[in-house]
Length: 153
Image (tube, rainbow, N blue to C red; front, side, top):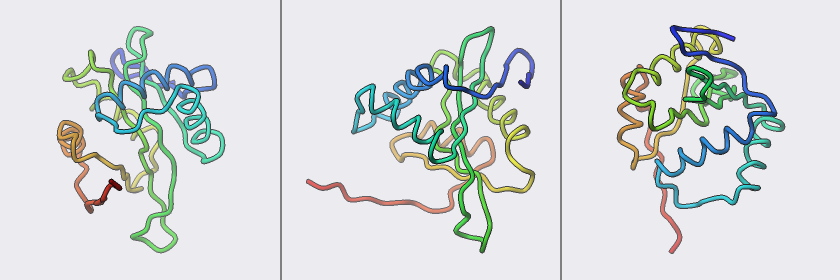
C-alpha cells in the first residue's frame, strides 16, 4: 500500500471486482459508450483481463472511499524490436472527485510504484472525450497516432 497525502493506493483483488465494474459503468457513461454490456458480461470481461490477459488493477482511496482506479498491463512495443510498454486499458476518477488534482496525484503515484523507469506508457483516448485528452496531455502524454474507424450501417 502506498500513500500520498490522504490518497491511498492499493492493488485490487477479487473482492473489488463489483466495485471496479460499478466505476467502469461510470466511465462508460462519461465516454458515451455506444455498446453497454450487461452486468454479467462486464464482470466476465474484467475477470478476463485480470485472470487470463495478465492485466493488473489498482484502486485509489480517499478516507476509505474508492475515488479512482487504473487497469494496466505490459504489452509488446510495436515501435521497438523486443521492447515492451505499459498499456493503460482504463484510468478513471469518480465524477465528484475530479478537478481537485486527485487524477494527477493518482497517476503519479501509480507511475512511481508500478511502471519501470524508462518504460513507455500508452493508452487510447476517445475523440469524443476532449477532457480525457486534456488530462493525459497535462500529465505528459502526447499523441502518437490516430486510430480511425468506419462503423457498419
